[in-house]
Length: 389
Image (tube, rainbow, N blue to C red; front, top):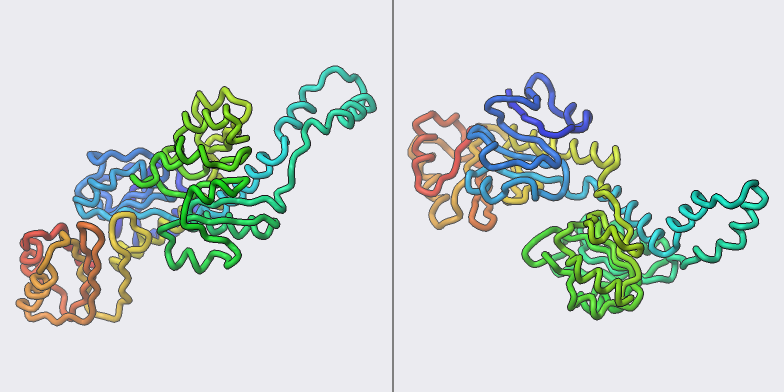
């Protein structure tokens, strides 16, 4: 039986993925095999030696000490794309709020106290509605920065709305490219994209290359009056530079899911309380996806959507399976296979992949390895962990 420790409130649909006959799930647990969480800030010291994997029901993993986990051979999963539709729909709402003064109009109607009857109120609103006029999205140009699961959905949606769409992503994957409409115009230069678009929407992870990507230099070349949307990560945007661009009217509005006190002082900023993925459907999708990934890893050693290990999947055709993590250095696989051969065991099937400084192996063998064989493999210099799956 596998033991799963949870943090935060996990969707019931996700928890129901763990059958009671094979899994024990609880928020308080000694010696868990895996951890399932959402936004809980996990310290390295809180992760016991029994933990094999951590899954976050969400895309970002800033709350998990990924580097420390990699050193210990602990696989960290996330759930890219599971909340993509929720974010896409909120981006649409943000573009509508940015193109028409809907919030100002609602506030005007709610706070109008001078009129005492419906007829007078109707007459006033008819006279004042021109104050809240705006523009339609159709015919406008959207620039999508980051064409992954969310960015591709946003780009395709904007095309359906009659917008022109420019996309920028120097690291777009083949899978993401297949999901992207051929009508999206890809640009190779971010400065070119922001100079030509009425709306700029960000859909990037936080990396050293993306931290502070939207800065003073970039905002200088933005098309005057453009609206900037950030439903990705706070660290991608230099807020001081954005405020300066708003003051200079280079930007007309900044709509963000990551408000700060300085941004809240401005009427040309529309702040939201980090609700991009806050729908019941998104939380369920993320929880189910995270649970399924943990189950496949614990039961079969397969890895999908890890942020620190390579993607590895091997169909089980019989025999006994070894899951082995090692430092990505030369001659490791040969030593592992020699240890198996020395025990008079045959390899049925295997796969070996690496990612940065770590390598991962799934090896199916004919006979169940004994403890002596496992000990010989663990004793090889560079081996991080060995598991009989």
